[in-house]
Amino acid sequence: MTTIWQLLRTGTLTCAWLLILPCFILLMSAIVPVIPWVRIYAIDVVPNRASWFLLFSLASLAAGLIAQIRRGTPAAQGLIATASFTALLASGVLAHFLYIAHSNGAHINLVDTLSTRNTSENAAPDESRVYSTPRGEPLWLDIYRPRQRLPHRPSPVIMFVHGGGFVEGSRKMGAANRRSYADAGWTVISIDYRLARPDRPTWDLATHDVRCALAWTAAHAVELDIDISRLTLSGASAGGSLAIAAAYSADHRVQDASCGPRVPRVAAVVAKAPLIDALGSWEHPGELRDLQRSYMSNYLGGSPQRYPTRYAAVDVRRYIGSTNPPTLLLAGANDPLLPATAIEDFARRLADKGSEARLVMFPYSGHEFNTTFDSITNQTVIQVVARFLTDNNVGPDSRIALPSETIASRYLREFHGFLSGPRMVKNMHPPMQKSDAFDARISWQVS
Image (tube, rainbow, N blue to C red):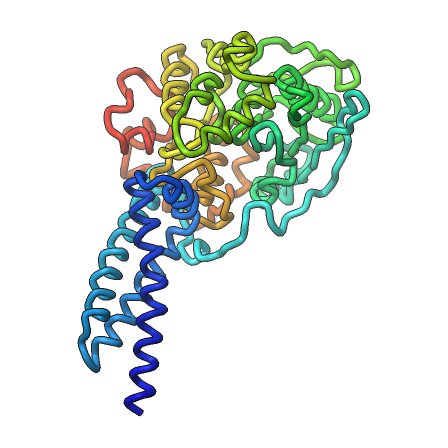
């Protein structure tokens, strides 16, 4: 029996060490992102699996305590110490994410955060159509129809533009999130656009495709039973940049009459980790510089030294003005591809011009901070987006529940707002003013 116990004890300790060491290294690399390449992985995994890190830490701690019962050894004592410290790190990270979610009015289901479902899994559109065929290339869009719809009232619409560095990706990305918004009362349209190739830069084509999709949507508004005056344009990464450019442009003409007679006015913009400054992104240091430069070279045809006017043309800061639609910006604080400082600066410039802008910055996070559907970060994103649009009168009817909001959580939100008074109104309903100017790191993560 003693031999069996020793084998079990040794095997348990070995497995626990193999479990806890990666957790410790990844958490430390996300909190203090200084280890090359390890940090790149950590800042994508930690925000998507924060709950699992705490669970693994507690499991390893339990294994160490059990092994310590019969006979204390340095291996068991070291495991207990390492697991305890890792559990503290995981608890701190988890608490920080929950604080940001709560401060932005999101209510998190912690049990659901243990799900590993990807945001592109287990969701299909209700219909797919071709909206344009430039030079014979069919461009498709997917339509997700609302599950809840009030009689004789067209639904608001969200159009999503996918990311992928302008060279890859498709309208299928983030399908589960698309379905979530549709279930809450929006008609959701997710579009493809022409992707860049070494022989075909699309810096002057991709935004045209987005505008074409907008014109097509407006032309089919009656058929789709949508309210085109409540149109939101949303995008991630490359798609976020295209969404901003298309929405901020004051030009409502279309180059291709087959798209539709007119590009409609966009009522709100949501951009996750958008490319703001192409030149700054080209110069951004780090492990992914070569990857980002390959994206930029394909999209723009070459380097900024060769095509300076193209890089200037795709800089979305040139569109900033006092008439820009309300804009929600979402980003990871440690994004290795697109520097968060550029997004923060963009939000400041919008506020300085009097445009309504809101920035939610996620700590310990990189470019792909919400790819797991039920992660704390993605639950926060879905609810923050839904509430931002509803607050700006481009959401579904108030009698339709927002995503992830139960009756109990709605009363909780209203009661919390009553207790918090004007301070919550300031945080939840910008525009940001100069006096709000990002005085502390946590303030601009929340505001």
